[in-house]
Image (cartoon, rainbow, N blue to C red; front, side, top):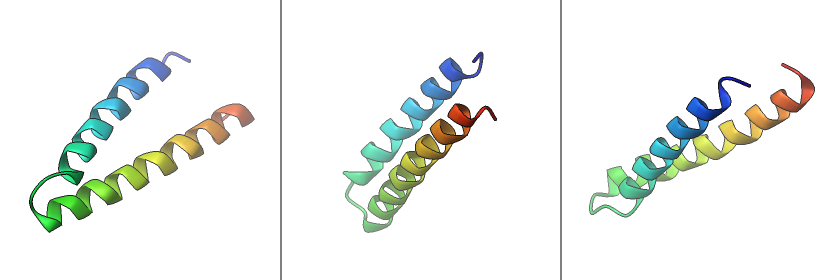
Length: 55
């Protein structure tokens, strides 16, 4: 429970960075932003499942 707030803050910062990269000019930066957002969404789902199971 004590890790939820720092994880939420770090995830929010990383999501902001990925969105910023997603709407940038370079195609490489767009790919990095899109893949980063997909990884963050997968991490959030996995963390939620593991947290509910007691890990």
